[in-house]
Image (cartoon, rainbow, N blue to C red; front, top):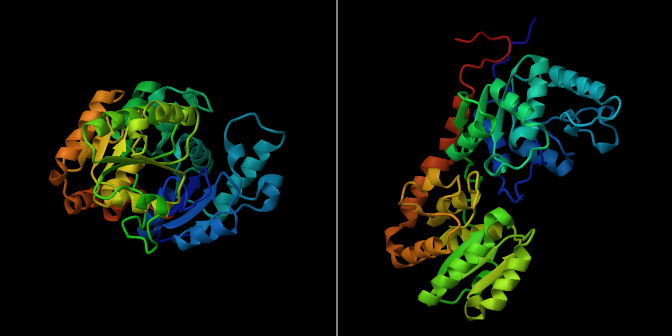
Length: 406
């Protein structure tokens, strides 16, 4: 008798191991839990080896980790799927891939395969789905499409990924436009899947705020920015705009959170040397845990995004989730959300004057941005129910194996 399951079986492919404390704020584990909450039978595989912690986390989200037998993947770990990418392969890699896919077909028997972390996982999802004769989906986040940077595989291969997928999910309308332009494809199968507000982020932590946050002067208007600082994030622009703002408004203070890469440390040190009059009003905390980010998001009077490029802007989602307004450059992703001027202010990217003017506007119009209203609007756009409805719509028309589509 053939299998006639009542639930859609979904295999989710991740690049990184699932981790709620990762710098993306747990948005990928949140997506896994959303799938399970919708009643799907969910399995999760990772391109990087999952340890016991990760396996237990997946189970706590209502899903099952997919672990191939150790003999399939040698010394790199039982669940490593990286060899499925079409890179230079060691002898026998193709056979190993065929064995892993066959094992997935028997033990998981997915109806849909989902690449959760952009084209690297999408390509693996496509390879598995094509071999098993099922549909696949790719959820796209990376800024490479915006910036024109090279990908780890040929553009033609990524274009085929998009053209043959059941659905291409993009976190913003600007990312969808960048994909269309870069690959010269219509992308009629695209739909928007914004990053969710990470699970539990709106809940106030039981732990006290970090000590460095207590160093903000009493009565100060606190601007805050948190990200992984690299060239496209423009810490130089943020600091220069704040300096101009601080010289015009004595109440202005700034907290800068996150690791610094590339030339960010040198840029910061040079700024502090040349702007000693405002340096004492800036707190640099370095990389912090997610609980500290949550404290900062609520303590701030305004969150500031100074980027040249953002595919979505997770900082924006975290800020508005707890009722904090956002200033952002027109850098891609934030425009979809901040077009509602009750949530914040947009300004031209790359302009110190434009960003400073937006900061001064926020200082002078603080009463126009009501925290409860901001949080309510954010929940309707990025909250649990809103995002789960979007995921449910992605799978409409796909029936479990052995069942006929209505």
